[in-house]
Amino acid sequence: MADPFAGTLTAGADLPPCDARIDALYRYWLSIRPSPGRLPGRKQFSPTAIPQLLRLIWLADVQRAPLRFKYRLIGTEHVEAAKFDPTGRWYDEVHPRFAQSSAYAQFVAAAERAEIAFYRGPPVYLIDAKFRTIERLILPMAQDGSEVDMLLGITVLDPKGQPPKPGATSST
Image (cartoon, rainbow, N blue to C red; front, side, top):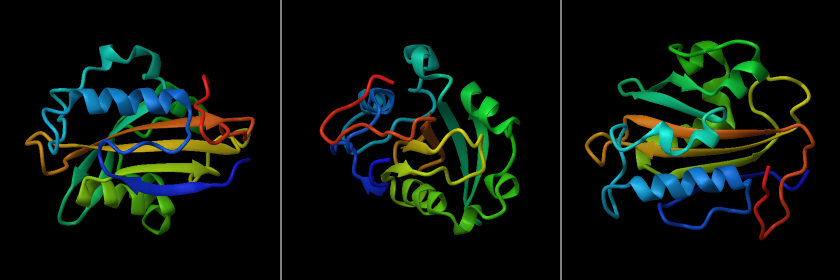
């Protein structure tokens, strides 16, 4: 496995070397922004524009005061790997250690500061043991263009544990 990576970016910044499907969702998200400096909302997002990614994407609602995240939609590949469907449930109920996880810090960065979060490394949550590496991208969404109310994400599960070589995207 290549070195793990966890970090945040501003909109328009280059992603680290990653799976081509993550890059495709990022490019789509950039294309649906109403204007530079503004975030796309659910009304700009059309799942039919990215049918090849639907099995891997997920949406999370953002609740404030207190800050919490709820599964709104989860791709079938994740449901199959986890062996259950958490749609409609709170992350902290499904994953009791969510607030202490590295994933939580990235969810907060996306929700509170509208940052783009990328992670490559071992799975944070218990999923099928054959998946040794994941790549995850979290993208902020806002109906009003500025206050994040939803997160659009993609998580690629890799049973081989072989992220792409630096400087290239993979086709898987």
